[in-house]
Length: 250
Image 1 (cartoon, rainbow, N blue to C red):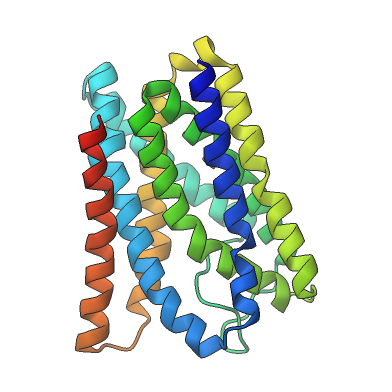
Image 2 (cartoon, helix red, strand yellow):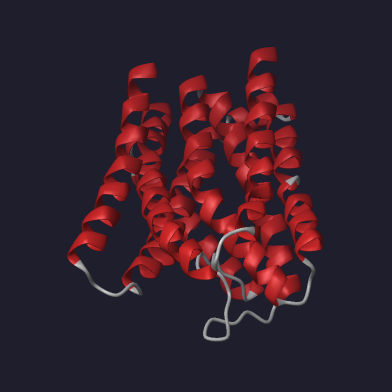
């Protein structure tokens, strides 16, 4: 159990530190940042789909059998993600803010980050309780998603009026709620163990929603071009491939 705690806490600390990736935006021009982000978004979408269909759903099925209940848990994850997003009037924006792409609800964005990061912690903790390889795979999927998300969130905060240093600090502060989430999951041990199939399936629904509703649409906003489309597709397949390669650890 001690090793699970070490891996779980190390994982969410790494995820939390990704919030500081906004530092990279200090020295990059907006156009250069956009060029990099489009491939990060493709990569993270592949990682989220890969984790959902290659690791999370098969693991949930092995734990309790693949019945209608697993499908309902996945759908619940999708529905809750939609409801939270609509309620908070917040979305994962991966393109830096500008006059053409404004964001006015800065504090709602922060509140949304708190909820989202806490859920990430719960999901990572539950995954480690199921198995170590699943915990590693889920952590990687979250990391892939967090990089473009945190850069986007940093842009929202700066646009909303915060200085870059304050925006970076607030972004990091909200990211720390992932640590609280993993502590809740792991300290609940035996209690939450019975909910692992639900938690894993719910996480799959959450990841599918993020990849399909937030990430893929961002790629479709890009101007069509053969080379850019090919590179985006390659980045997507790479994200899936890395998650697929982790099955050899099981």
